[in-house]
Image 1: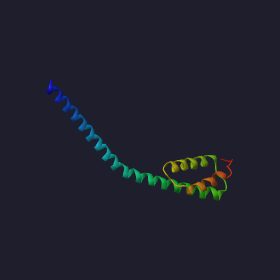
Image 2: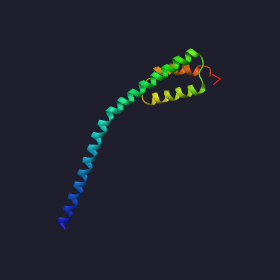
Image 3: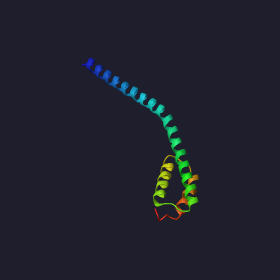
Image 4: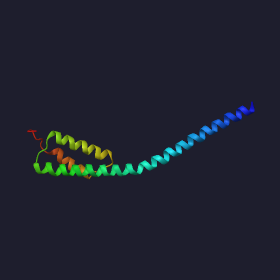
Amino acid sequence: MTSLWVLEVGAAAGAIMAVVGLATWVVKTLKKISVPLQGIKSASVSSLRYSIVLAHREYKQNGVISRMALECVCDMYAQYINLGGNGFIVALMEELKRLPIDSSS
């Protein structure tokens, strides 16, 4: 009876060791993935900021913005903020939102 208990404890300990080993591997793998993902996130924020700045320049020069263009720029802005973009774009967005909507488009 005692030997059966020892086998069960040994099997449980082996299973726990396997789970800990797997968890350690997962954590190490996630750390390796995290670095490239941060670079992609940073590049995305920069690209969105650039696109918003270009849109602002174009539509401010035109003096009007189409409803669809405004919606697209607002979507870009939402993703910019979700990805951790800073607030310097806020003033540009406010200016775009104040532009008259082009009724011809």
